[in-house]
Image 1 (tube, one colour):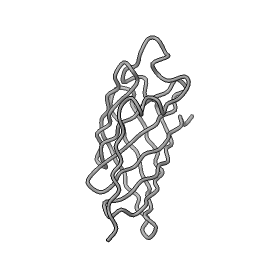
Image 2 (tube, helix red, strand yellow):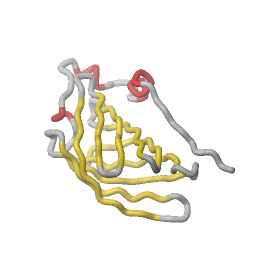
Image 3 (tube, rainbow, N blue to C red):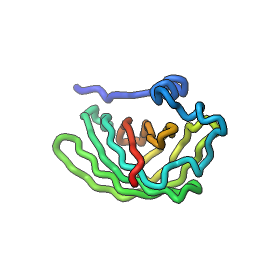
Length: 134
């Protein structure tokens, strides 16, 4: 029997993952307008059966706390494309939470507008990186 994989991450570890030039180095802090207008992301994780999954998605933000996008993920045998929408908040340390129709994501926005994320829902755990799309 294959056991599900569970990933957890502390805020300190997540912040450390952002590396040099982390958001807290900005001085003035962050708010919802700090989220890039458009990002392209990729991530790896596991589904609720413990099978490895990979995903790519595009996210558009109004920079006022609302987002929408499309995700495509694979679990080795199935490919699924899902549109999504949701809301997000970002605190002054540039760490945030997005609640979407496909899951809840914690994230950090770096000075260069790159984003690191971790997402969960009852069907998967996923983490990865995003780059601003221009």
